[in-house]
Amino acid sequence: MKTIEVTEWINQQRISRLQILVLVLCAAAAALEGFDTQSIGFVAPSVIHEWHLAPKDFTPAFVVGLLGLLVGCLVIAPLADWIGRKKLLVGTSLWFGVFSLLTAEASTMSTLSILRFLTDAGLGGGMANAIALTSEYFPARKRAAMTVVMFCGFPLGASLGGFLAAALIPRYGWPSVFVLGGILPILLAIVLVFTLPESIRYLVLKRRAQERVAAILRRINPRASFAQGTTFAIAEEQRSGLTVGHLFREGRAAGTVLLWMMFFMNLLGLFLLTSWLPTLLHDAGLSISMAVVIISVQQGSGVIASIAAGPILERRSCVSLLLPLFVLSGLGIAAIGSVGASVPLILAAAAISGIGSVTGQNVANALAAVYYPTYIRATGVGWALGIGRIGAIVGPTVGGLMLALHWTTSSIFLFGAVPSFIAAAAALTMMWVEGRRETTVAPASVTVAR
Image (cartoon, rainbow, N blue to C red):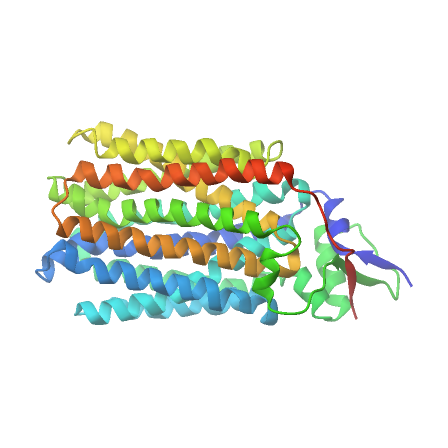
């Protein structure tokens, strides 16, 4: 009886239509998540005006929604290791689609905040598994690059969503943003049911029928043939105990802590910027539409830079690219608050900050996906994103506090640049730690699909 090690088999294949399909579908899910995550920032100026609120009164909507993302990343995302990545992606797409539609009916801050929490809990559960599923379908030589390209969907969705919001809000009002953000993920969930394959890793490790695994492998390479009785296996570590605990074992503790620090600091600065920038710019005299367009430029520049980073990651490690990106992020954020009311200069500074922070986050996502072995990949990525979401909660909260204390716009952005430089220091430290790390990996056991 012949046994085929699936991961090694994929490593030897060319990129196929099926793998591109997985990338596109996961990117589409990430795009809708990006649009929905950023939608609260798009509508904030309009809601504040319509409900006669002070800007600081809108802080709970930002914070509670990000708390939902945290819960999704830490609690919902790891469930994919038990029920499968496809089921979780379909379920979370339906979840945040339905609650986004309900958000359009909100009429009070408390209702809006509760619905944002529920919506973003679904978002957080889906993001980590889109990353993990993409990384599992691509060969090792392409894994980091394709994960970065896939997650470009997130800032792309946020960027395109900004232009859509700028067109929708003046004509149909702020609820239209949530209506669109609800219909699209529900439609995507239907598409995922019929087109997205399940994780091969899940099918093998959960001992599903080997014919399903063989069928997926033949879609990757139509010329492949498997003899009767062939079994499929994945050589990976099998460990008992709490899954999260394995993130700190076998020499991974320092890397895990530094990875979490990068996620925390980068998302703190990024969400401080994206949550309050439209409101700050509007208060400075720019139209709501122009403020939203500036955010879209920031996100869009990150998409372009992330795509350009893909080929670089085939030659260099993720962590070596993070250092200059985080430095660039800090410089760009500081510049936004230092160029006055000049729209061209604000656009340029926003683009620089997007190249640094958005691309940096995409590369950090890829680093998390390749840093952990497959049996804890969903947990590793989910917890890294979850810790990052704590930073994303702190960012808008601190921004609201600074507004309440009447900080100047330039001071707020100068403060917002500091986390990026701390993230850069963490990346530099991780380069040193990983350079000295001695590889002590226990022999892998082989799990076979039966």
